[in-house]
Image (cartoon, rainbow, N blue to C red; front, side, top):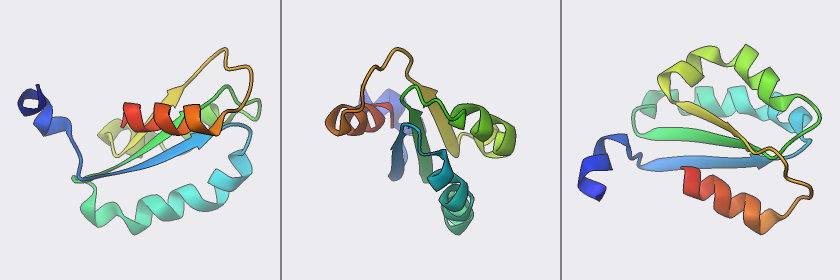
Length: 97
């Protein structure tokens, strides 16, 4: 199983679980992506939006299209997530990475 997926596995995944914290990503995401770009083939950034109301997913799609297209940045959105639970958020982003 791992052998056939080895081409897609990364050495390091930055897992970002978010709900209504777009203002924080606006300050940090581009810098973190640029700071690690030299190793982009071995690194991925995984953002999981847990049904935010601040349009963070739309902001990421419109501002980071090039990073999304290469797979360096991955975006997932969880709908119908009624409350924030840090453990669930962490485990979900780690699973998706």
